[in-house]
Image (tube, rainbow, N blue to C red; front, top):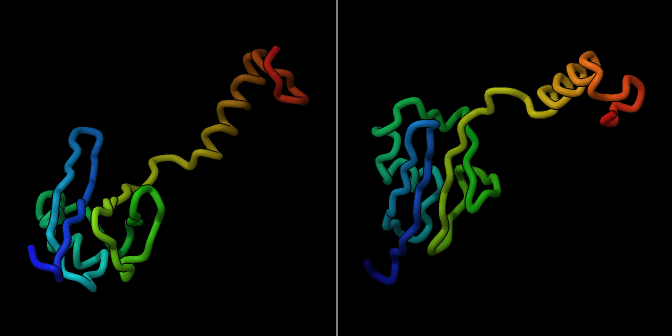
Length: 108
């Protein structure tokens, strides 16, 4: 590693497997290029950077952003269900089953 290079991590997880790869990149390397350089796409061909969001340390970022030394780039999988919709359905079910007030939604 030279002064023009530094180390970062690239992370991706499926329900069955997690991968955290350490990658040495040059200054001015974008998030997209760092992901490609890591080789993670060959391990997980389902990764589509045109569709999936990415982030650095749990904060979404653009593929054109530049990571800093020690950053962890994360590739996020799409959500299976909308969290707000799932909560609304649970609340409706609780009301129907009599476990919640039908007007306020508060627990009985």
